[in-house]
Length: 377
Ligand SMILES: Cc1cc2nc3c(=O)[nH]c(=O)nc-3n(C[C@H](O)[C@H](O)[C@H](O)COP(=O)(O)OP(=O)(O)OC[C@H]3O[C@@H](n4cnc5c(N)ncnc54)[C@H](O)[C@@H]3O)c2cc1C
Image 1: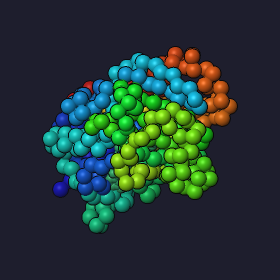
Image 2: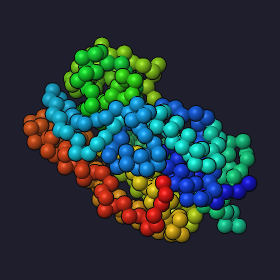
Image 3: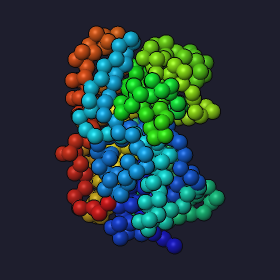
C-alpha cells in the first residue's frame, strides 16, 4: 500500500506534520524507530510559540502534568539573577510529550509504524521516494518529510560539529527546600566549556540538562561523576540546588554531534526537511521544539500549496537566519571565559538583557510565513 506522504521520524516535527497532513485529508505513513516513547536529551522547556502550536494540534500540556515556567534565572560563578519570562512557558518530559503526539497522530488517521528504523532513503526512477527499513522491507511515496531529529540518514548527513558538543540529561529529586526555590523557574548555569539548565518537570522531578565541549570532558576522563562534580565547583548555584538531591536514572542519557547553528540550504524535489534536520539552534534558547513545530507547519503549508520542497527549504532558511545568528552570537558569549568573568558584575542589568534576548531568539510572528495556504492542524 502506498501513501501520499511518508514521514521519517516520529518526534515533535514528524508527528506535528503527520497530524496536520492527515487532518487535511492526506494519507500519511509515519515511521519511528523507537517502539515506545522514551526519555530524550532535552531541557524540556516549552516556549510560548511551542505551546500555541501544540494547542492547535490538540495537545493539552497542562492535562499531561506540564509545570508552568514563569521565571528564567541565570547563574554564573557565585551570582544569580532572575527575570520574568515575557511569554507563557511550561516544561514537560519528552517522554510524555512524544507519547501524546504519537497518540494524536494515530487518532488523526496516520498509519504509524513504531519500532521500525529507516536505514536508507533513495529516489526511484518513477518519481517516488523509497525508504528501506531495518528488516529490508520498503515503503514508497511521492513525498517524504525527513524528521529524524539528531540522527542523520546515510546520504543526508548534516555537517560535522567542529566543537564536538556532548549533551547529558539526568533527572533528580531535589530536597524540599531546593524544589520549592526552583518551582516555576528555568535556571541557566554557565561553566567553562559549556552551560546547563535545570528546571522542574511533572511528578515533582527536576531535569538537569547540560552541554560541554568534548575537550573539556576529555580532561575529566569522560566520566559523568567527574563532570557533575566539576560543574558544581564552577557554579556553586548548581551545587546548592543539587545538595542532597537523589539521581533518578541509573546513568545520564547522552547525545553527541550537535551541529549548532546549522540551517539546511537546500533539498531535493519531494523531500521536505523539518525539525533538527532543517535547523539546530543552540540549546540555551529552549527554542528547538518551537522551531520543529514551526518548520513542520511551514512544510505542510508548502506541500498543500504545491510549493516545491527546495523553495520551502530556502524560505525556511531565510526566515530562521536572523534568529539563528543572534542565538549563535549569544552562545559564543556564554562560552567565552572573559564574558563569564564579567557576567557576574553585570547581573543587575542581565534580567533586562534576558528579556530582550528571549524575545529576539524566538520565532517571531513575522517569521512564520514560510508557507501560504491555511493549514488545519
Ligand atoms: C542538550 C539539548 C537541550 C535541549 N533543550 C531544549 C529545550 O529545553 N526546549 C526546546 O524547545 N528544545 C530543546 N532542545 C532541542 C530539541 O530537543 C530539538 O530541537 C527537537 O527535539 C527537534 O525535534 P525533531 O522532531 O526534529 O527531533 P526529535 O524530537 O529528536 O525526533 C526525531 C525522531 O526520529 C526518530 N528517528 C531517528 N532516526 C530514525 C530512523 N533512522 N528511522 C526512524 N526513526 C528515526 C527518533 O527516534 C526520534 O523519535 C534541546 C536540544 C539539546 C541537544
